[in-house]
Length: 136
Image (cartoon, rainbow, N blue to C red; front, top):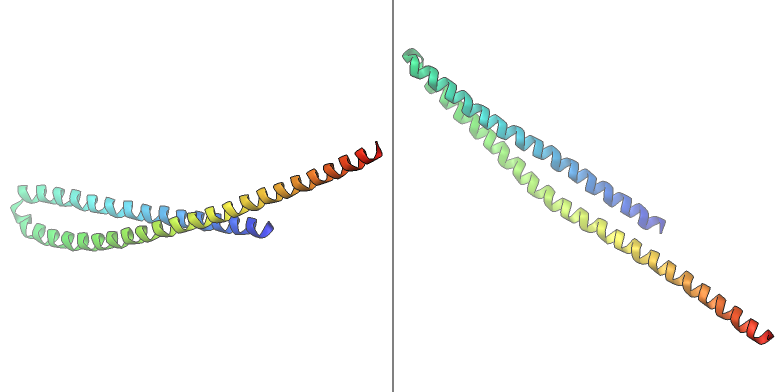
């Protein structure tokens, strides 16, 4: 029974570890999405400046090219994080299944031990009743 309890603890630890990794990846995903939003806000601010200052138009064009490159990099990172999240989700499903398997095994062994104890008690009581009936 101790070995199954140890396996359950290990399985729970794996589930917890994968969940922590998922949370970290979700935080990274959130940060990357915020970066994209921030870049869009910067482009809008710079566009408004370029609309009012015609000398700034050529700088604005360079800026937008730079932002496009930054967005491409952020989107590539975002794709990688999302792929990692899918893989971690699969790992979490497997870890949960493994944990459930060990918990079910533990429950079965516990129930089997209870059933054996009841059978021994019943046998003892039957022997006591037979012995008592012989004396009477």
